Amino acid sequence: MNRLVSIALKYGVSLFCLFYAFRGVPLRELWSVLSRFPLPPMFLTTAVSFAAYAVMGVRLTRMNAPPLSFRSAFCATLVGLAVNNVVPAKAGEVAKAVWLGRDSHLSADAALGIVFMERFFDVNALALLSLWFGWHVGQRGATILFLVCLLAGWLVLLSMRHCPRIVSWAAYLPLPTKITGFLQRFLSALVGHLRSERLVWMGSTTLLVWSLYALETTVALNGVAGLGLSWKAALSVFALSSLGMLLPSSPGAIGVYEAIAVTALRTHDVPHEQALAAALFAHMAQFIPVTLAGGLAMLAFPPEPKEEGAEG
Image (spheres, one colour):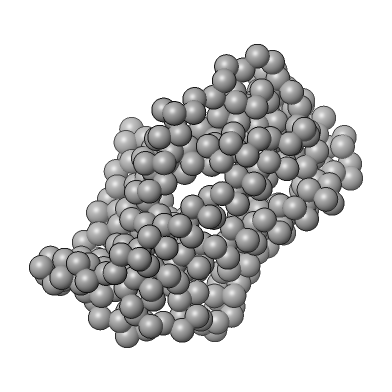
């Protein structure tokens, strides 16, 4: 029953957001705006997004010793994003870890540790983005709790790094032996990533990934939709829509992205039909190509069977 209620709430949020985004916009006018979008900037938007995915693949290659192959890391990235777009509960992160484990012969805890650290650095980037947005709109207090939680996460990780005995405490949790054993191995894998050179690598590549994400949104809004927003306005739309993706909703945040992007664009005096057309294109540019590419990667480059585990 709880699962059904959770599913109903998520899809209900998406439907409500779709209604809000499309409310009062005649479909004929919406199509008229979409049909005027120029093709070259549309292709450029897709190219920038795949450049970001390629950097995400490069980011993963240095998260293991010996380094992972770019082909394996890039395919895992595409598959993870594609699965997240069609399956609920962020199953794409598990799919990415499974792909890395099978294709690169990593143990499950090592693969999950890599994916966890990747997501943790993305959360850091989102926290910095939310801090800038809160400062930009004069709502600095809204990000304090989020940043405190983030700092607490860093404190826990660094505590495990400087006091390895903390990892062994997992054995005393009231859980089955197999789970506590896996938890210990997973935490040990995380601690292995907390080396200065790896942290610098993750920080620099994450900054590049999110810069490309912001550029993709700017190209979609100004180059494709021709909205003529300033860089601060475009970045604020990107920040707000990125934060909105955290809301519980259907896979791919269908409806939620559109509603939040339309709301953000309306605050910059963009007409509703233009704001909706821009939001639809920006979202579909993130959704359709990578979902197709992830499906193609699963068909064309299936991971090799895992023969034996290896610690990262």
